[in-house]
Amino acid sequence: MKNNNMICDLETGVCGVAGGEEMEMIDFNQPKKSIEVYYVTDPICSHCWAIEPVLRRFKEQYGHYFNFHPVMGGLLEKWHDGPIDPANGIYKPADVAPHWREVGEHSRMPIDGSLMIDNPVQSSFPPSRVYKVIQKNHNDALAYEYLRRSREALFPFNQNISERSVMVEIVNQLGLDGEAIVKEAEQPVGQQLLNEDFALTRSLGARGFPTIIMINEDNKGVKIVGGRPFESYVDGLKQVLSKEDLQPNPQPSLTSLLEKEKLLFSKEIEVMYSVEQSEINAFVEKELSLGSYQKKEILGESYFTK
Image (cartoon, rainbow, N blue to C red; front, side, top):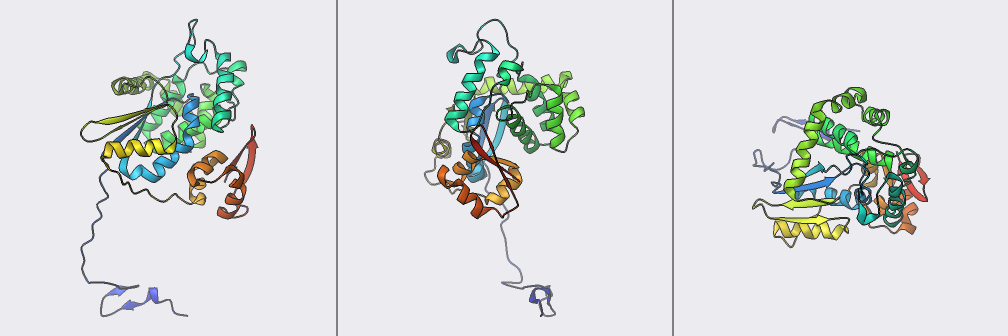
């Protein structure tokens, strides 16, 4: 059987399918991203973990309108005798555990939290510095993946992400040299890079986590503090663009999303595809080929891995 795509036409000089005019103008210009979106966050921010499902969908469907900039805000330099977060009753590490568990149960992004009693994170600065070094030496995407892997390690899997060995292991899993990157983050340059983010956080007027600030070309913006529904972020984007009608990208297939993300909790799939919790197993079985994924459970929540 002949494959017509392989035929070369002597008249047109085309191998494959010739179509249309001999010469035509094509516009390869992508629409200019005129909005800057700053996400002020921290590796140990529980409410930032809780908004992962919503933020991912927002980036996937509307990211063609904006440039996305995560900014490390410095949630915890160190524990001291005074109150850390009196509004939430947090004076010492053990006070964090019940607060985190509550956030996990409410958001259905699971959080164990017991390490804050047994082996507490002493500072969020070390993983934040590692994030900045990966960003400097490699790219934003790898740094953001490091942030995600750190949160997975900390919240559901209860590892101390401020410990050197844990940071090295997470960086190694990204295919980078964990020892070299963590060592660089421990040098003065690590804190210098982090201080730049702290200065940006102050200039943006962000005082809580998560804070999302969208700024247009006229330097007018919208600030959204705390976890909000998906529609709130879309509405914020409409305001800064002065557009009522935004064209969302279609959601990626679950196969390609899991390929990229490596691990997704049930809640993340539900939010991305507007699926009810009771329908999640049927949806996953329909979307993913048998044997291409594993379903596991932690703290009463399902999650899926490649």
